[in-house]
Image (cartoon, rainbow, N blue to C red; front, side, top):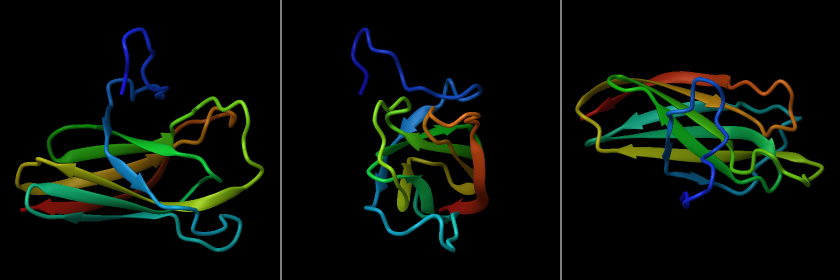
Length: 138
């Protein structure tokens, strides 16, 4: 939630008009420095699409948020830390599962892409395409 006088989220170039979307994040589920499969899975239903971002690589104890851009049959998501400029970070990384649900969609086929961006302590920090998939809204 934004309050009067507060700046909006720190979004990368090209994502300035992206809208926040509701997402949930699990506790740490693994070690990103061992074999893992960072990917997305998309499912559709009656006026909704779920995007599961599995084995998402972020810092330990780092809360993330999701944004959506695009319209029509193509939707792009960006998942990034809530705090893009942390003053203190943990000395570890881990894997999370992040679920994004988008309600109120029209019936049809949707092309979905998901990008990940780490906090600004990483340079460069351009969005990285994690995966693309399709989903059908009934």
